[in-house]
Length: 187
Image (cartoon, rainbow, N blue to C red; front, side, top):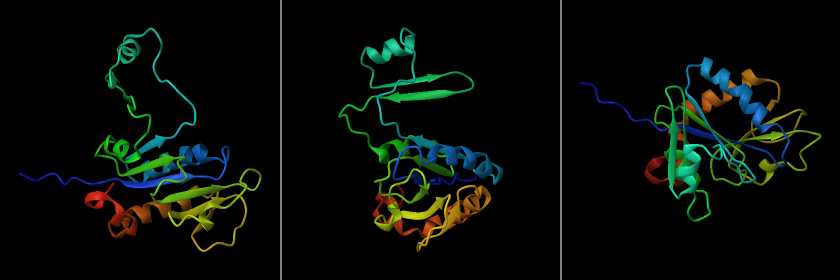
């Protein structure tokens, strides 16, 4: 009997100095291209404001409001796990462990200060600074202008090259220096 190899997903953040720079749009374009490369992709999306994915009055909403720490809503096609942060502090490392082990790549939208590898989105009209100048966790930058920087840079519309970079990065993930800071070698 073959033993199942448990793999850890490659984690890459997509960040920007300012809101409205196109992080979500970039991720939306990357996902289908990464899937075409045979990869399973998951996304963690950071929201700046209070949000609710449940409908007031529905059973799952009422159960959560009654005090359940976690509520899993599912049907044959989809599931959603709602976890209340008891300490009013989100733990990205814990959230990553909740992602399916079948995932090859986890893209994290936002969280520009996290200590994971990130791709910066920089737009001439929106971005007020270049984050990679002070953040060594940024492994590449995508922009609508030509930038003179020391890390790989891509045109914002060159999705194919960005995907190739991500796939190459994922394939070399086992040798990634970011993993030295992660417990048990992986986040």
